[in-house]
Image 1 (tube, rainbow, N blue to C red):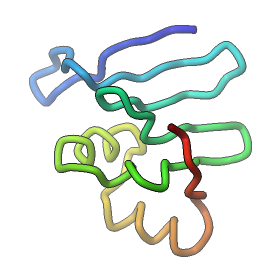
Image 2 (image 1 turned 180 degrees about the vertical axis):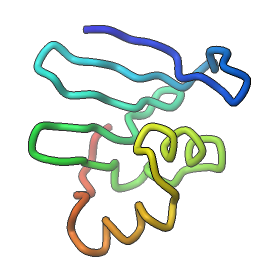
Image 3 (image 1 turned 120 degrees about the horizontal axis):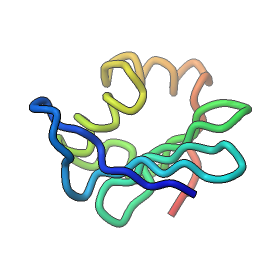
Image 4 (image 1 turned 90 degrees about the vertical axis):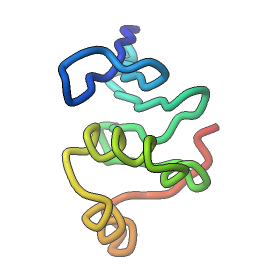
Length: 87
C-alpha cells in the first residue's frame, strides 16, 4: 500500500488530502478521515454521504477524478459512478 498527499495549486503537498494505492490496484481518495472515492477495476465508487462534503473536499475530489462537479453529478445520475457507503 502506498499513501501520498495530494498537491495544491502551488505544487506543494496538501495536508489531510490523500491518495492511497492499495496492493490490489484500487486507488482511494481520502479527505481527513473519510474515504470519498475509489477507482476500482470495475469503475468508480463515491461515498454516498461524503462525496460532496465541502468545498475543499470537492476541489480535491475533482482533481482526483479529473473532472468538474457537474460532470461527476451527471455520471452519478447516468449510473457511470456508483454511490456506496465507503466509511
